[in-house]
Amino acid sequence: MSAVRTAPPPAFAPSKFARSLTLIVLVVAMVYFMGPVIWLIIASSKSTADLLTTPPFAFSQLNWVANWQALMSWTGGQFPRWVINSVIYSSLAGVVGTMISLACGFAIAKYQFPGRKALLMITMTGLLMPVALLTVPLYVLFQTIGLANTPWAVIVPSLVSPFGLFLGRVYAEASVPTELLEAARVDGAGEVRIFFTIVLRLLGPAMLTIFLFIFVATWNNILLPLMMISSDNLKPVTLGLYGMASYYAPNKGAMMLGALLGVLPLVALFLALQRHWRAGLAAGAVKG
Image: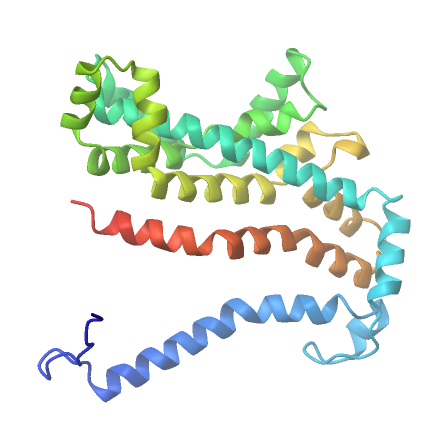
């Protein structure tokens, strides 16, 4: 028998002014976030001349085919490869980085060892350090060990996420009962088995959130590939578009189309995972 939804008591019901103000704020936020996306879709259909002469949110001639041909011509047919490179780099960094973050967060939350709190504080200082500050030392290190201009030069630095470790620790403290771990040890389960068969299932909300953060951060990172990658066939899409934008008098229509196609995988990922992500966040919000 389905539950009957009732209106909140008058004392707790929001006023008409509050509802109207909330609606206005939500509409303004929607326009603020969707405006650039809509503009990018429209701009990707224009030629360079149309971008300079027509209103920003007005379609003119639909030049998607011509822009695609210009994009492939300028990149020497490498643009699809750049997108695939970004997918590979971001996916590997997201999956492995998520496992590292959850394992470290779980260890700090549930294991007692000397220097535990100091290790956490040192790791958290990574949240205060700009990524650009570490890029040059990373380049020197990878150049020394011979991994510069390889996919690992982009993937390996992206595996470490101080925010992911912090979030994994918070979820592990709130979602993994110590009694459950002790019962598993009594039954003969080892620590590795406990982590992969019990802990990861309880940390599902954190797993998806950390994966998305690392994936997006790796996808959008341009300074690290700019320092590390010099071969055209290894470039991610962000570095490829940066090179096109820095070219003298670039084809702006083709560049806008490349930017649109370069962001579509991110949009598809969020649309595919939004139901699980929202459900996970809601589940994590009510854990005590």
